[in-house]
Image (cartoon, rainbow, N blue to C red; front, side):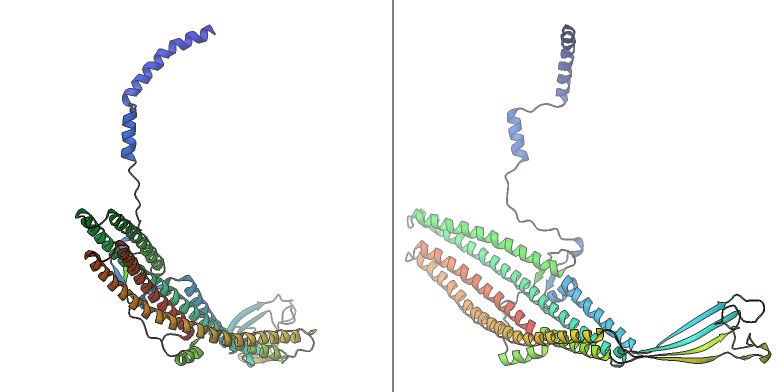
Length: 476
């Protein structure tokens, strides 16, 4: 223990000198210095709306119309591209089904080298008339199954292709609705931002007026407080509308560009509302151009083809093979026969035909069971087609009524916005003349803000209602 204390006392001065030497290079800050350093390194937090960086390739500002936006979205939307690919695949299936009805031509060349027995000119295998046998055939094959000579496979493929194309059209119209909604949502958010900015300017102007009136002794301090509250609320509304505008731009940019790019502007035609056709015209277009009804009709057609194919399976199957070429002991057009060379060279080129008939006799009721299955599917397809017709008529009435109400609301909201703007102008004049109160001015400011926003919402509603109606009727 004594030895441990002596060793510790010997090394303590050495450690102390080492710490003093190191502290010369790394000075320890004082409490005041630490406080000021912390203050400098940690500035006061500030709320900012961040925007993604614009790629160098997208530095040019792009002006996009609604039709441009739809075309761009068709190149980027995965669901629409998948539906289009399915339609192309179905078309190739139809081409293959059509080609299956036609005979096929193939060529084959073989050399059959058989071990000889040493005593006879032919080989050890009875199927060969010589040790060397050469085949060079051109083969024409035709499979005349019930699926082929009744053309049920081709008709089924036609129905499947029509269904795929109708589904691609459904995806296209659904994408149009989505793009239309996002497009005019961005337009509305820009309107809201402009409205909020104008309302904030008006609130600031009113706040300045009340302050000046208070200094002249013509207004109470309560009016100044109320005006300041209104001004700060409009500031917050402006920030919220800016955030909503940026979010709307991002939502639309996802569909428009293969890489995220916000460097674009849209053509604002929200105020130029399209006309709504008469219901009789809309009903006629829906009967001809509705893809959902087309899917139901083609599905029923496909079910009919399945029933016809199941019935045709009871018919016999015919096969035909026509072979033209040589099968000889020498690879030549003329050569002696190995089994009788005394006859000399004989012609080798010729043909032979193989025809067969396969008649179904007994399969334990499998073909009849498949016919029953096809009939059950046919009943379901017919029921689906009938329901699709009723559903289309119901959706058509609903969508048309929604568009009619939205159009009426748009016209009303436009008039209301004009009246609110005029009311605010008159009340401001009355307040400056001392004939109106602060509450009336604030109420007029809020009324104008709500009226203009309601007008923008009505425009968006009508545009989306028109796009939804066109999913049932096609473009008009």
